[in-house]
Image (cartoon, rainbow, N blue to C red; front, side, top):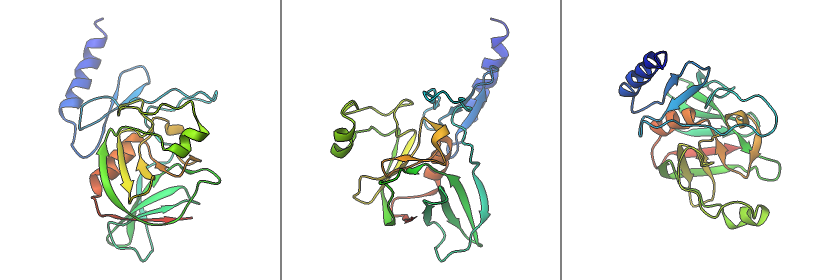
Length: 207
């Protein structure tokens, strides 16, 4: 029991110093890295893989978030999603953008066009649309927001469509084409993006 005291003290200190704009990481000494949601001080846990592959660190994407050069005609503050690259860019001033890895729509579910963020939600509830329930009648009709919810820690709703930019409890799917048309980021990345955009932000989806 004694060996857990320093670990718990370290975790508590990090929780107290959590920023409102960015999730914090706490390592509990077992190789498991847990992301702490700054809004609730709750862990943003992930579900274990079921495909036999290795389980990556909790909430950590294989695609690092970074600031990169960006040449385009988009105004600073615009969100640009490149479906082919499986990357999301938040355009900054000075010819740069913050680049995030995303999971995109699988074949038959990709789309392109212009949308606007019309709503932001923390730990959103999930109600699968009727078309999804017809494909997957085994899905729940409603799931309350929380660490096991497939929408993850944050959601940005796009216009009046059924599509969202949202978090994920399956970070190993980032950079793949797996969704029904939504765009998924790790919980850490979507929390960062959520803090940087507002309702009314333009979103451009490139196919």
